[in-house]
Amino acid sequence: MKKYKIAKEVREQILNRVKNEGVSVADAAKEHGVDPTTIYGWLKEGAESGASALEMARLRRENQELKLLVADMVLKLSEAQKKK
Image (cartoon, rainbow, N blue to C red; front, side, top):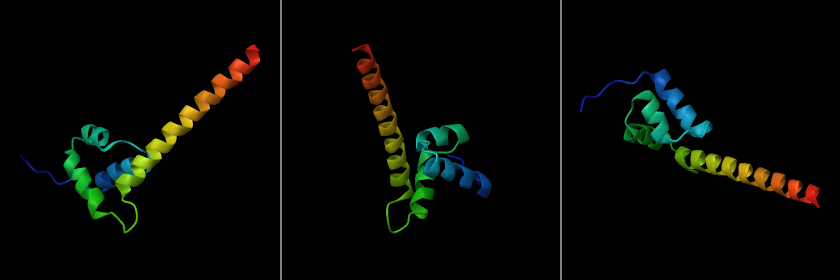
């Protein structure tokens, strides 16, 4: 496998998307032509003593999904109450 040097700016952009925007490692890897294990390695390097960046990204995605589910449930409940 041929190795390429990833520009620091690109690496930071990828990590920002995974950590802060909730983009999955697989999607970011595909979009930037980087092996997912490379991104996981970067995340591991930058992991702090608390929750890892990967865990934080997963929790943000999960939180967003839960918010959408709650909003959908509230909307359906509101529509059901209007029909009564």
